[in-house]
Length: 95
Image (cartoon, rainbow, N blue to C red; front, side, top):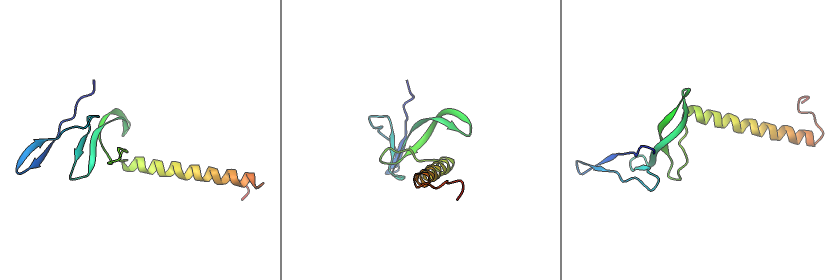
């Protein structure tokens, strides 16, 4: 069973426990982000990590992950353009 997260927030000079949502995630009011665990590789180590999530529960990507996603999207766009050129009868390697 996954470890339940615990967190606190400072209110009126006292720490008050944060209440997890039904998924066990904690809301960080000051950052306006969720905090939860994520399982996967970071710096070539596969483990459970604490990660931030946007209000829509989408993972906040690390810089390396953002770079990978941009490169992947650029590659997909290039492949679409190459396919379109071939469709038009143009060899993309000859352009």
